[in-house]
Length: 301
Image 1: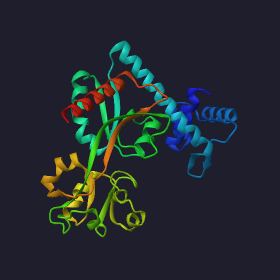
Image 2: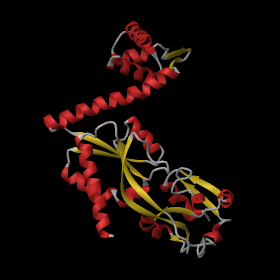
Image 3: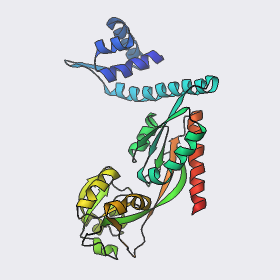
Image 4: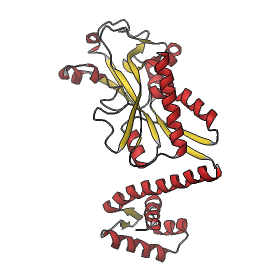
C-alpha cells in the first residue's frame, strides 16, 4: 500500500468526485481509476461507491481513510520535526483547551512558551471531551487540556494530571434561589447542562440518589461556557462552572456563587496526547511549559 494510494482515497473523500480528485492530484482520470482499482484489489474490498452525484466512500473506505488520515498527518509532523531540527524552520503545535484550563493554566503556559519558542505558531482550540479525545486520536490536536470521562482516556492515550478545578453552583444575583444553602433546595429549579452529559457541567452528577437526579429539570443545554455566560444573566437558571471561570467573568455579569453547605466536586484537569506516536520537538517543549505552569500554580496554592 503506497502513500499515494492513501492520499488518493483521502482526496476522493474530500472532493466527492473522480474528476475533481484527478485535478487536485494532477493526474488523468483513467490513471486515478487505475490506482483506485489497484488499492481495492490489494485490500480485497470496494472502497468507493459511485452515485449520480459523484462518489462517496464505502464502509471499508471510511475505515481505511480514518487510518490514512493519521498516517499522512504523522508524515507531515515528521517533515516538520526534521525541518525544525535541520533548518530551524517555523513549526506549529495545536492545543485543545477546556474552559477551566483556558482560564487557569493556558495564559501563563502560552506566555512562557511564546517567550522561549517564538518561531513556533501555536494554535489553540476550544475543546470538550469526548470530542477532544477523538481529535487527539485523529491527529487534529497534538494534545489537549481538560477533564476525562470516568473510564479514563484509553490505553492509546498518554494522560498526566495537572491541577484540580473546583466546581461551583452559579445563578444570577436576582435569582429566587440565590440564597439557597442546601443542594436539596435546588431539586425543583430550572438547570442548565453545560458540555457533555455526565461531564463536570451536568447537575445530575451532584445528586447521589439516581431517582432525584433523573427528576431534575434540565431546561437548557449549552455546548460552550461562552453561550452560558451570554444566557445566564438573562434567565432564572442554575448551572455549574469552574470557580476560576466565575471569578473572571461573574462580577461583570452579576452572577453569584450559591453558598451551599453541601460539598461540591473538584475536577481534575489532565494533559492528554497520543501514546502510540511521539510528540514533535515543539510539542514536547509545549508540554514542558504546561507542566512548569501547573507546578507554579500548585506552589501558589
